Length: 311
Image (cartoon, rainbow, N blue to C red; front, side, top):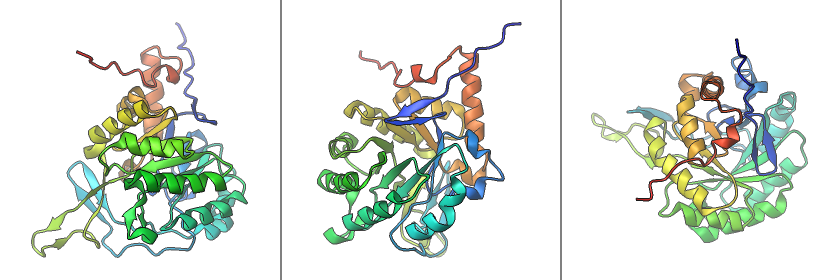
């Protein structure tokens, strides 16, 4: 009996090499350690920790989650322990794992982004930063950083100057042209793009006539957004030379494969972690099995292999 050849799932996201392209997305996997008894963290390509701010944040009022058809609305409000507590209390436990640990960073001014990164720069055990630019810039009237290419360039450039580690930029899908935003981030020094954050949405309780969330609107995620985000990944990859990480509605191996074929060098599993804490492992196992069954010895041969219909 012929023994199937080993599948090489390792990928490069810029200068960072991952053992495989499956990562757990920020905000859906805690700080990583919470899943250690459920998931073999050593096997993951990496995981992105909850967004870190300069000071601790209590987050949004309840209810924070609302189920939608084929997805979920969330308004958690970026609750987190703050960057200093993360470094002191969470990061030491994460250093034992082989998976790449990526710190998601956010702020409401450019100075806050830079402040978080400067504290993390003094700590060991992180592989990269993921810049969440879907936050309102309070210094400029609350306009989202990620909706304006000039503000994208400003915050990414400042973060780039502060960071020695690779810098990923998590872009918003709530823009007119993802290519313009992607190029602004690339030109300002981004090493990779995460495409994309949640879609702004809302849901109403018809009895109370109020939002089903503690806030009026929230972020839509899950399978419902996959076709939209898949297009954004494809368009972003065509617009820039830096790697793209795909994120949105991934629940099984075929979902990850679609993103990879569209041009993603790696993918993040998000909402699926809420209903299935082992979702990342199942996607990874399914991906390896699919490659074996289809005689794909190296996952890199699939990246960007989409055959566009030019007729």
